[in-house]
Length: 367
Image (tube, rainbow, N blue to C red; front, side, top):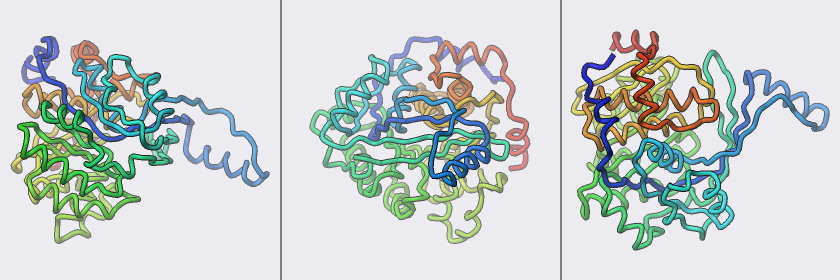
């Protein structure tokens, strides 16, 4: 499957990398895992019609949540312990300590804010496993560059990569991104990584992020999925209507990502359920996703980003980097306990010559 053994060799070798910095969100995630979405909604309607009651037949889990915490946790499992900067309250800090690996650096957790929480409903819908999140954004909605302490700024200055995630919850997202990445550009040699998240309910941030952050050369790597590709393509392309309904048109996914990269100059690392791609200087590297049973959907993109970040810091070529990211995501979504994989897990997975998505293979051929 791989063109060379370089990825496996890199994964077997001891890591000699400085820790990246990940910020700024932490959520307590309450997973409600059910069968089909239609059956779940019908059950809720029956309860409402009778004036309330109890819907049984689901399984439920309380887990660490938030793009930053999940990405940091995935990086730690891969052997690269990052610095994590988040704001919550004292109760949230206590919960965070109990929900993550004790080796994760929590010395930059601010406790002067408000707890953020999400109910994530996992269900089958139209042949795909989806996660539907209902969130209270807490302090994630108001995190600002001014909230960073001198200690926070110091670890940022020492990091090889700074990742800013979950901007879709933040009312001040363009200002936060611009202020943070301007500081990183002027004071460090670190790479900058950004993943906005789904902006459906905070769409006012999209164009300022595209025009005042991405197009200004402040971001090296933009992580995104097919939904976010559509939003950013509409923000940067005069023919914005072309990208309005691309979720149902997978042949447009790579063209949308190419448009974003071309118009902003950013390397776009792009993950979808069927394939993934890296687009840099109009050069497209795309490979199909692995075909695995999906037992959990929420957090798949975070695991993928962690593999992408590690591959970037290891200096892997795009195909190897995408393979690592795909492996990390596949092992996570197929885990019954939503466990992030280790490097040895990835090695064993790849040695097993896992199957890849036929849909993804066909879509790549058509681009």
